[in-house]
Image (cartoon, rainbow, N blue to C red; front, side, top):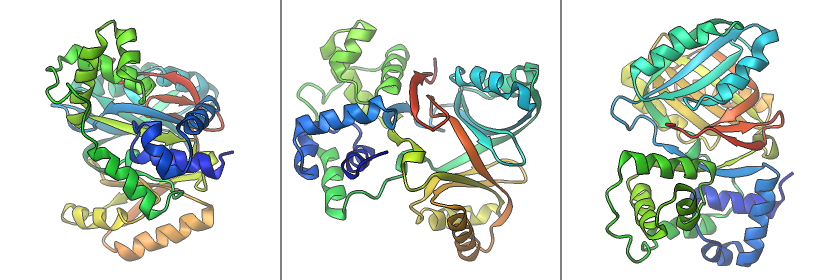
Length: 336
């Protein structure tokens, strides 16, 4: 579903999501116009998209949690539709065993998380039970995952573009109010490559001001830009999640181990009996077993309590996905 040239472009945008076509053209050996057309085709087919979200665990009192949900099969569709439209629910996965849904949730306070878990979810008629794991440390997440379509020299050249000087007038950005920051993040969530002029037209502010404010926001590292790809269009169509128990003193060492795997999508420390979670994209079920064997060998202090394979992803970092994992274009902006 994706050509090699499309995969190369997506890989480039994973490294630098807002790189200009002119910057990428000589590295990818194509013209700016060709890259623009290529990206337009990929996004129209829902096979790749660029989004933004507040950096997890950075805000004062911010909470990230994984919620396992068991529910009646007959009511699952209505439940998923409701959760898809909830901006607190970043991601929704249908799991193969042990739980029906796995939700990734980001809230601004423990009270907000408690309301969702203790009051709102139980009110839905199809929900039977929930189990919440609160993230205590996020070690890796999907914005760091990369395709393998570029060679080392190309990847280094694109990474070096990050050092390109900011545009004139953006070295001293205006102070960002919470209201302005939320508006910028909301528009970047829908289109992480949106220009200052495009955002200014939506939020009804001067383009020059938005340009300075946008530069300040991106430089603050409080927002994550991420180029995502439809999983089924890659060589790694299977998501596996391992729920593990690990002595707290060993977390740092095991993080160093799992960070060496290019398949890694998510790694976090959590509360509860399963206090360490690892999620990867793998190429096949035999590959899953090989990776698990590697993990058990390299991290002998790690006890795998349970593992689950994702049957279907319906939402990823705010973007609704269809049954084939392609972006539908429906987005719930984080933080309202």
